[in-house]
Length: 177
Image (cartoon, rainbow, N blue to C red; front, side, top):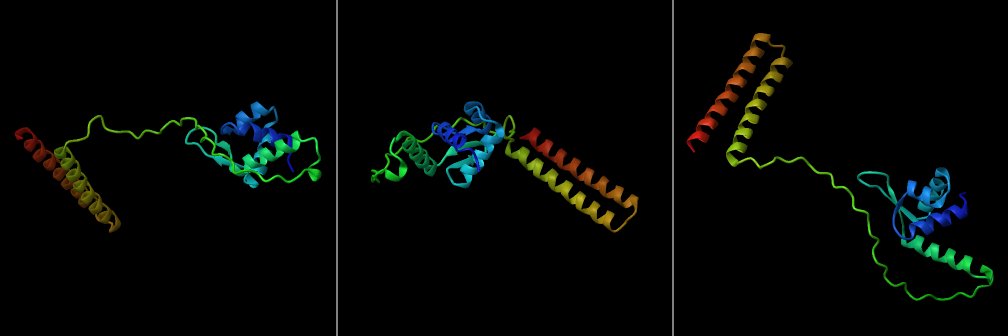
């Protein structure tokens, strides 16, 4: 069982926008353990949801159930009449709230070439990759069958010659075209 006062503080601070656990500790003045226990309890009752971030600690956000719970807590603490004697009032449907503004996250960039390779360059890359793949497959077969080192060296030599001739053909075509 967590401290209801800490739960109330956490709910009130999450009302405005999502916050990390460290931010909640600094804003509530409670210990890290108390805030974590309150968050665990609130997540278990679906009042708060944990939103992992790409970079940095996870944010915790109030759910619609949590908003209603916070409103109920506010009415209970504000009312001088005991909860058992309060009249039940039917509420109007809640107006739509503006969506919460999320902090911008840093996008992880994938490395790219300065300029995309030309089609002829792509063709060279594909041919070289094919030649290398054939050489690797033959080398693997030779190693698996325990063939002599001389035969394995011959496969490497043939693979290198094929890759060099592929490059020479590409270079001639590039110079002429």
